[in-house]
Amino acid sequence: MAGTVPPERRMVNDIAVAFQHLPEQEAAEAVARHIRSFWDPRMRARLAEFVAAGAEGFNPVALAAARLVTPPDAAAVG
Image 1 (spheres, one colour):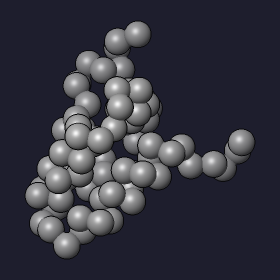
Image 2: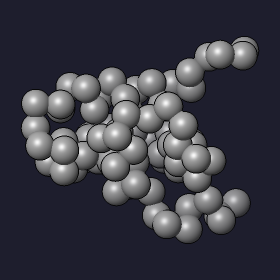
Image 3: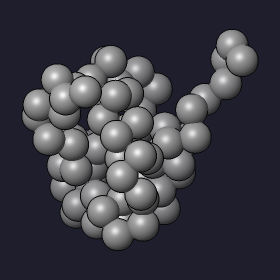
Image 4: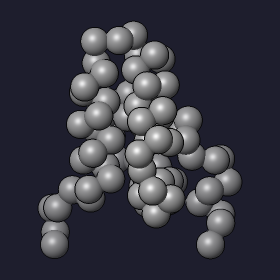
């Protein structure tokens, strides 16, 4: 479906908004903790794919968090 926001991108942006009361680095770390705790490996892999593809449409805190949980070479795997 054209124009549909992938669920992982929508969710990480929503989670980032929930932590917007914190300073940016603390918020990114809190979002990253949430992802590590509650997202399954497939969701984290899709998030890594979006980041590797340019990270268009990510909230800055969401993007920082995604980079904390995404290994630098994750796009090369697979």
